[in-house]
Length: 257
Ligand code: DAK
Image 1: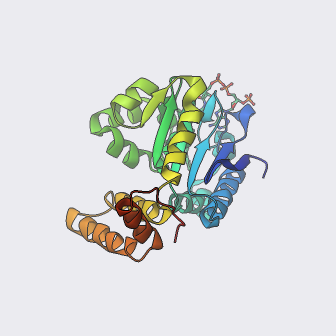
Image 2: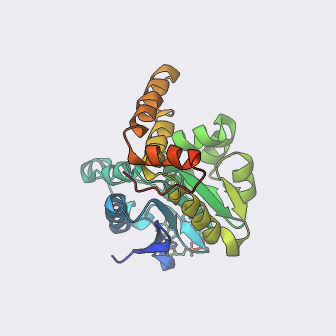
Image 3: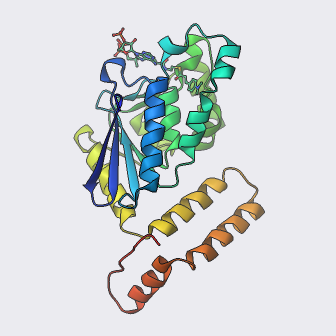
């Protein structure tokens, strides 16, 4: 893989994916996105991985989709290339993904952080959907996910002007989980992943699925989905182990089964 670096077991049961196109501020070209999808699909199948941290570098998480790659394309070429399939499949990752963001998270970069399940930001992080400044609009979910995350008024302001949101503001609006000094953001994200990796991976995946369902359904349907997944946890060894360990006053040992 040229543009992605994967490190497993950085912490127990945690994998770290680093976007690695630093000269282009991690601009998300097709190769990088394909490599990212491959890495996520492999990690999803890997029993030694229970939580994933996705990061860039201090200067940029990612400054957007690669403008140079798409600048001359026609609408029909874009349609036929069907690059959104890769993005859609990334969203289907079953294991939790924490974005560790420092510097620019713009355009597709911001959309990628919002496709993750949680975001830890460094104080230097800047989020934005500046597509309007280059004559287009967000295409990988920005108008929908940013609006759901920060509300209509702020999303309109950000998307219609292309202004950036500082880490502090992103935290205020609920886009990110936590803001920490730049030397801490990766550590903090890995710690969060490590904590999640200690509970039942079966329950974690079922919970993630149910939470995401809340964005796509009415309450009744969402509740029914949650109930189905709740029952499903009782088919796992992990649920038996978790409750038994509680009663026996010991630490549970989860197997992800
Ligand atoms: N694409 C390509 N190259 C980029 C880039 C980008 N998005 N962002 C930065 N670079 C490159 C620069 O061209 C420069 O390359 P050289 O000139 O050195 O060859 C290098 O990275 C360093 O950038 P700067 O010299 O500009 O660095 P500065 O610190 O001065 O400025 C900046 C940093 C982040 C403010 C600036 O680079 C910037 O404004 N970048 C563009 C931000 C932007 O407009 N992002 C939104 C792009 S549109 C899709 C999925 C998603 C999308 C579309 C389709 N499909 C699945 C089909 C999403 C679209 C977008 O994200």
